[in-house]
Length: 319
Image (cartoon, rainbow, N blue to C red; front, side, top):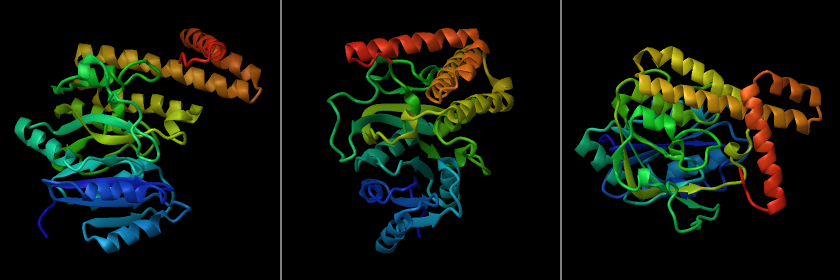
């Protein structure tokens, strides 16, 4: 068979209620040849049966299953091992894409030589209905097509900061730009795309952004990004250390400043999450100990608690 232009990789976990919509949106792509590689992360529901049924219906679909639940990074690594396309495109199992999206991304990559291309997104609910009229990225910084360098990638990926966060974008990546061995950091169960792209940019790979949206991002109440726990935020801090150890020698002064600013933000968020968890568990001594361990983080945490309380009084979301 001819090599596909794009391998769309889908890491699936308890996805039997929405996986088919995601897969069929990728298979409907126009202007490029595609394959869809589904890796079920040992779901306890009927996800793998659905994936295998989709594979039986269309030879462009590959279905695989992890032996045990290992997280989205491990599932995506397996999918990349099975992928044969010139480009790899990430698609979450509860999301979808427009028919012309992949062809636009591929054309742009080929015209500019970019190793990574991402586009703006449209937010939808779990039924696929659009949420609001605006796109996901709304600031003037992303109103037009542009390049994204490492300093920009870091600066627009600060947790709990109001404004655009580009780490949610789902990239199309040249297969030959990806490392031969492990691609995603398997210690992470969220933010895995951020560190993959940051690592590639640190190695001199280039990234382009298209302002025209083609990816439909589902806002789900069950997303782990809305239920952070201390183990998630500690995993971010550990990943920052690994990232600095692997790539730090290559970074410019501007990039180091951006990394230091992000690290401080991550420490603040970690303390907020850890303190909140301790308070909810009625371990007040632990909460005070966490706050005393980092006074700058304590100021951030107290400010966040104040805004949360004020938001409840005003019935507005202030954080």
